[in-house]
Amino acid sequence: MGIFDLIFPDSSKKIYHEDFKKALYQISALSSKEKAYVEDAFKDDLEGGLSKYEIKQRCSQLLHKSNDSLDPYEVEQIKNKLLKYF
Image (cartoon, rainbow, N blue to C red):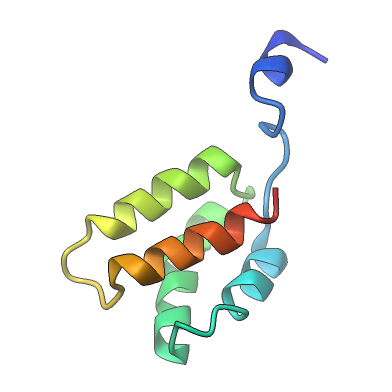
């Protein structure tokens, strides 16, 4: 265990496409169209897996994206559901 692992204990843990999809489809506040949008928005990032930090960062980007169909409550639901994985 290195110093980085002591400072950031979950840094090596990642969520991959299947777990991401399962978590996403458990969020009842999202329509199927919104779920497909989120899955598409994260698809390139999921190839190597997403860390806790990357999820927070991507959700923050979604919050500030003015032309999407997600409201802040929905983005918060997505972030919370994904972070439960860690």
